[in-house]
Length: 321
Ligand SMILES: NC(=O)c1ccc[n+]([C@@H]2O[C@H](COP(=O)([O-])OP(=O)(O)OC[C@H]3O[C@@H](n4cnc5c(N)ncnc54)[C@H](OP(=O)(O)O)[C@@H]3O)[C@@H](O)[C@H]2O)c1
Image (cartoon, rainbow, N blue to C red):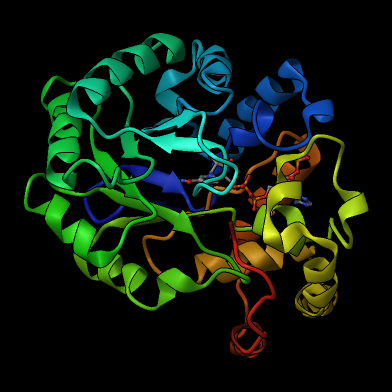
C-alpha cells in the first residue's frame, strides 16, 4: 500500500485507513459478526491499512473491546486511534443524534484508562477529542488529553469536527497531531478552511464517512435499501426524497468508475486522498470484500479530467445530521 505520514511529524501509515465503527455500532445491526470483523482488521494490517480508528462511544465500549481482541499479538503493526468526549444518551436532534458531549478534564482522565483496558494496550498512537464540549473551554479538555501524552498513555492527540479557531486554541496548549472531520464528495465543508490550515501546519487530516456512509458506493437508492434498525434512517440525507435527488452524484461517480475500470468506492476514496498530502481517509467496513476494494483505492490516481468532473458535482440535497 502507498504510504504517507500521520501529519508532518507522525509515523508512516497506509494512505487508506480503516474505521471500525460499523462493526458494533450505528449501522446494520443484523449484519454484524465478531469473527468476520476481526478477520477484516487482520487483513487490513496485511494489506498495509495500518491506521485503525475506533472510539469509546461506539457500542458503547464494544468497539474498543473488539479492536483490542483483533490486535492481540499484532498491536505494533497498527497505528491505533481512539476517541473520547461523547456518551450515549443525547436527544435525537443532537449533533451527532443520540449522543451527548463531555469534555470535563476529570472525565477525560478516567476515560483514557478505561479505553486502554478495553484495547488491551498501554498506549494508543492517537487519542482524539470526538467533539468539543460547548460547556468546557477547549483549553481545559485539551490540557487533559495532553496529560495522557505526558503519562505515555497516548503518543499524540487529535481533534474531530473543529473550526480553525478551535485548532489554534488547542495548539496554544499542546500540538495538534490530527483533525478528523467528515469529508467526501457530498460533504466538502473542510475544503474551505480546515483542511488548508491542517496542510499548512503539517496536521494529519482524517476524513470520516469518506464513502458518504455507503451512499457514494451506490448502495442506497431509497430508504428501503437500509437494513432494519439502521441509524442512518434518522439522517436527513437518507430520507427517500434526498436519496432520490442525490442519485445524480452517484451516477457521475459510477460513470467515472466505469471509464477507469474501478469501483465507485475507489473513485470516491481516490478523490478524498487527492485533497492533500496528509489526508488519510478511514472508510468503514465490516466486510472483507469491501476492505479489499477500499485498499485498492490507494492504487488509483485520478486524472485532471476525472478530478475536474468530480469537483464540479452539485451540492447534495439534505443536511448531514
Ligand atoms: N469523528 C466522528 O465524529 C466520526 C463520525 C462517523 C464516523 N467516524 C469514523 O469514520 C469511519 C468511517 O465512516 P462511516 O463508517 O460513517 O462511513 P463510510 O466509510 O463513508 O461508509 C461506511 C458504509 O459503506 C459501506 N462500504 C464500505 N466500503 C464499501 C465498498 N467498497 N463498497 C460498498 N459499500 C461499502 C459499509 O458497509 P459494511 O459496513 O456493510 O461493510 C458501510 O455501510 C467510521 O468507522 C468511524 O471510525 C467518525
